[in-house]
Length: 193
Image (cartoon, rainbow, N blue to C red; front, side):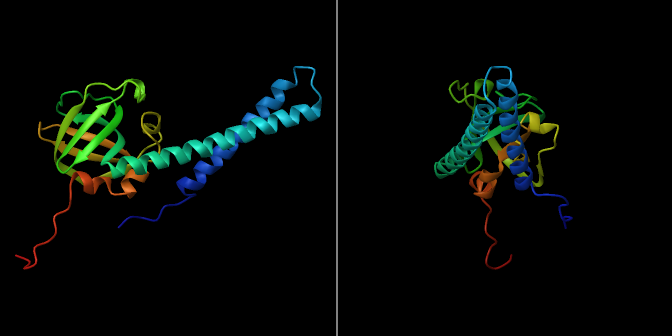
């Protein structure tokens, strides 16, 4: 049994940080325009327009990312990150590799991107998944949030090469059943035997 989470939810915290970023962008613009010969009203308008621009672009990018995640899942693909915890696996290392994975039962074809940019894919590597340890599923710690998406869920995978990997999958993909695409749960036999 898990203990109830204390404090504000991640969504409320994210909205608060986002609104603070918009406010800071507007305040910085207001302060910087003070060095020029500009009226106070014009400084306020410029600050407000920058805040509005930051706000709209953030909401738009969030919508695009959510839409792309749903489209990828329909094609059994997911944006994710992988790293080796124990052992060795060709094409992967102990540092996080960010990319996209094509999922099929028991197998993942991971395509890492140079600097995490989709424009420069690296050579794909195939991961034969023997076990996906759902009991090891955890959220991202503040220290790890610099390396992977802060809303990701981390899961331990045991591969056919004997390596143990850490798989970071963004929260929307987890909610939409990514783990079931990779390791479908077998239904219990009707006789209970």
